[in-house]
Length: 106
Image (tube, rainbow, N blue to C red; front, top):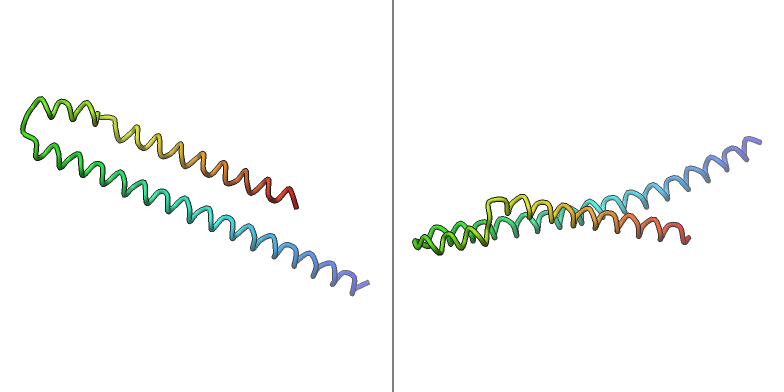
């Protein structure tokens, strides 16, 4: 009887270790991807903001500056943030859905 208990405990711990390592790899890959996309989005946003600020600084014509204000409104940062947040949420949802579907096939 003690050998059966040792075998069951060993099998259960091996099984939990396998699933734990698989889950850790999945979570690590998801966090890496989300961080990478967030970093690229931040760089893109910073470059666009710097480009707009540089253009506004060098242009002296008021009519052209009003046109720039139309192209880059005061709430552009909030709009870009909302778009990038929605894209990130959709990516995480689809990634989790694919993981769930892949795990249910096995």
